[in-house]
Image (cartoon, rainbow, N blue to C red; front, side, top):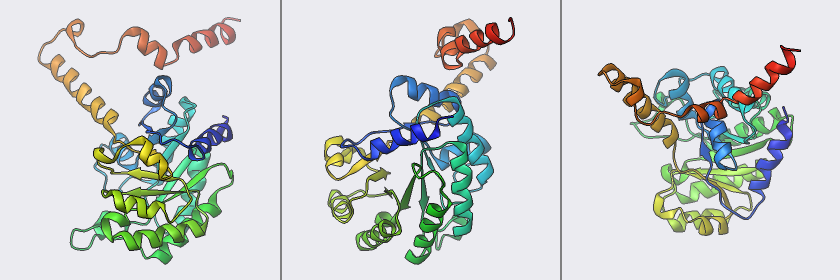
Length: 287
């Protein structure tokens, strides 16, 4: 697999002048669809991974091996550069280093490590808490140390704008920038002035999550150095709804031929690469 080539394409997005919206993917076929319809990068979120692999909410009960295995399946099946949310790195700074090693082998192009206190059972009074800046720096340095292919992008992620405020967010962004991360991932910023203030303090590419739709002006975001902006993970939710509707219709007596919203045979062949397998069968099995 040409991991470095797709990682360089990912870095071209970070080094560009535009803000892109990634395609939220969760398995090999969704990644192939995102690539086919033209998304520059795919996004595999920790929350989506927990639902896909475990059928569980985003409570950080997914393990590193489960997450890396699914990321590897996605990377193997598609050449779209994949960004992943590696949560807190599944433990302390030493676990973060191991997380980077495993995800790099899986073929990802970019990953984020966050400074949230996880798992969520550690929340104080039901509120999200952040690690100390010093522990966050240690995690970022460990992530960079775990990387072998320097074209793999490491993002320092913080929810400080939503949790501890603008001043602390700026302090964390500066600290992670100084630690050497390749980009900053901000989650929870809802004020235009706050985003502008943080962007003024770093020259690193910025990724945003949890941004209200009213602020998703691609040109304005690009002017701040925002290169990636998440819009949610609707494809997975849509797949759940479609599966539910189909199974319920069948259970209620709808004839298979009368079902709505079922992929055509042609689309199924395309996303499963039926033509490639037919060609390989002729070449390798029929002599």
